[in-house]
Image (tube, rainbow, N blue to C red; front, top):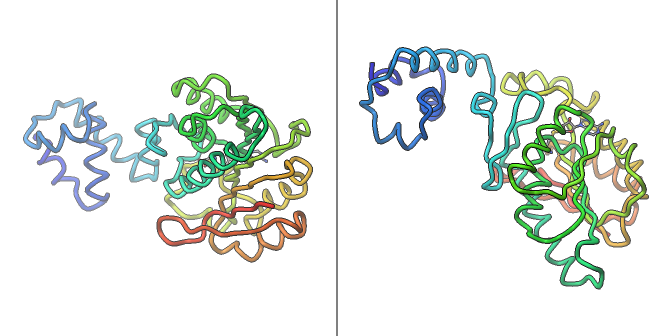
Amino acid sequence: MTAKELLKKYQGKLEPAELDQILALAMHKKIEYLYKNPEKKLSVSTVKTFKKLFLLRLANWPLAYLKGDKEFCGLKFKVNKNTLVPRPESELIVAEALKYITRLDSRSTRQENNHQIIDIGCGSGALILSLAKLSKKKANYIALDISAKTLGIAKTNARKLGLKKIKFIKSDLLKNVLPIKFDLVLANLPYLNPKQLKEPSIKKEPRLALLSGQDGLDHYRQLFVQVPKYLNKEYLLLLEINPEQKEAIEKIITANLPDGKIKFLKDLTGHLRVVKISN
Ligand SMILES: C[S@@+](CC[C@H](N)C(=O)[O-])C[C@H]1O[C@@H](n2cnc3c(N)ncnc32)[C@H](O)[C@@H]1O
């Protein structure tokens, strides 16, 4: 059977682009190879692998788990069932953080590598490692997660990206963090409620990365009790939220950081996704 024939046989149940990716994966080739060679005869073992991957994808295993990696901010991140698959909308946090670091450096009289930056709930490390890699500025970068397995993946990603100086902390929010004053805090913590968790497309991703109490805000409620004493005189907090949480998160922030200026940023699809809090 040729690649084209196989794709025709399986069309309908998955998006055509996904089928192409699964076949390229089964062939151990880049997608471009598949596009250039639609008449390529497939071996029995390639067809068998394709069928296996197809069924896994139908059962909602993310393509990124099948591939073992995901591109984020133009960089490649290893992912598996212990890490959330980084989403393109989260790149907005990195873009804002990069702008802030640049401004911080131009104003600061301190040694640039004294800047303290933390990512709370780092998962694969997508946010903090992209920032460290793309900013090229020296700073103290801390990647924190409650899961040791997740941190293991983040450490692998740091090594693969050639980032040697990232500090990794296993902690429930800021419980195990010494009272450092942070200039920049990033957090894409779990923010879904039990109903939202039923969405089939996220079924195979870790519950620990997604669910946060009855209204999806337990993590941010706890974080805002802890975070004020960790903030430098000038700070920026960048959080990812669900668009429906705008009013609720505003209340949580103002209750704990009454002087904080709050701004909401829209993601690529026009939804409020990132909260920017500064003083
Ligand atoms: C939504 S995922 C975000 C992962 C990554 N930052 C990203 O943007 O792709 C949330 C992460 O928070 C971690 N997490 C959950 N509860 C936590 C807690 N109490 N303290 C620290 N990390 C937590 C999860 O293990 C998961 O890696």
